Image (cartoon, rainbow, N blue to C red):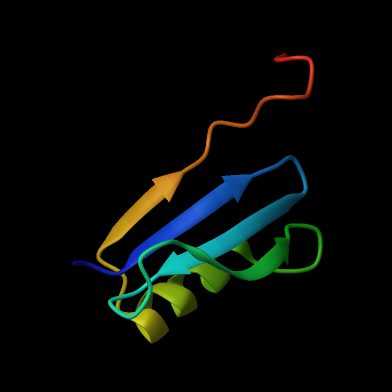
Length: 66
């Protein structure tokens, strides 16, 4: 089983979760505020720290499916 990074993309915030060898489902890790943090740098640090091999990006839709 590979380490997985799950990204829930939003206009301002990105929800980050990881699934590691020890967990069978993604566990919330942090929220990245794109106005305050560098998205690229934050994701690169997470990939390195948790030895991520796969990335999944959620498809954002509103409550009214728009």
